[in-house]
Image: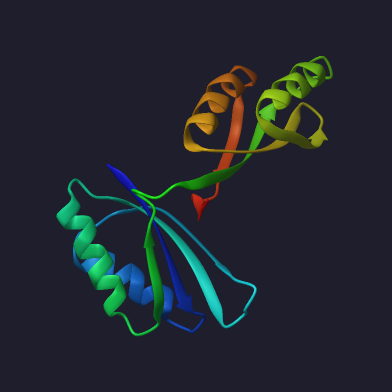
Length: 157
């Protein structure tokens, strides 16, 4: 099962490497990782999605993260009411007749056409994991030429 964990850390050189090393040393795979500064440039916010088959593993991850000196707080969203989102950017096949169909599609999903060049459009969309999965299935009909996505971001309600 995938679990989403947020970690507030001091924004210092090597903190990300130490956290990644913690996961690597214990054989835990990071499925998704997003890191950015907060309103305070001395603090960064990390959202980590990790595979943990049982509560003991998740508890161990939380304990190990809390032991790191640069970690301020650790929040496990598993049992908390929260909102999470991912952003995707895609290059898809495009003709002018596809414009209305895409615009109608993006009324259902949060997205828009960013750029059109020749027979290719770059589109962006935001949603939870299920929404992104559904949207990718629909957009595959246009022919996905390239796909990039952020890691999951999460915040408590």
